[in-house]
Amino acid sequence: MKIIAYLKPTCGWSMGVRAIMKKYDLEFEDRDIINNADQYAEMVEKSGQPLSPCVEIDGAMLADVSGDEVESYMLSNALVTSNETAAEAPTNAACTDEEHEAMRSKTIRFF
Image 1 (cartoon, rainbow, N blue to C red):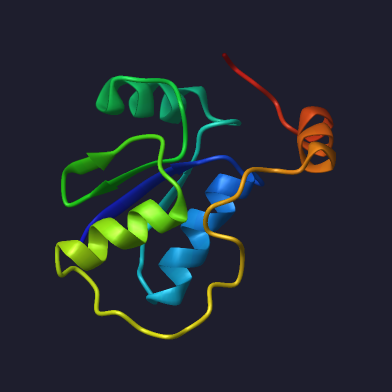
Image 2: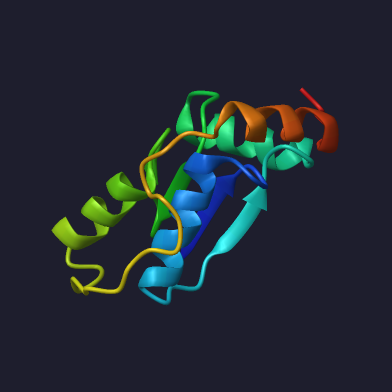
């Protein structure tokens, strides 16, 4: 399975997607859309919209999704088998106000 995840470095939604990938021990390309303008542009072109996270699984684009939605897609398409492993981060949660403020001072935006 080829997985490309267009993610922010520290976003709650992005951390949820990473937690699902780890829960199922899946290899994936983690593309930084905040610090790499080309990767952001590629995500927008492929997904047809500017919101993240976006996850491409074997050519199918899941746009503006949570970790829960990615997990549901993979389970319903028999790409993974259900397991009881706990995710290491919330899989359906935005960043806190404090996290947003910290990101504002640490990231370089190209867009």
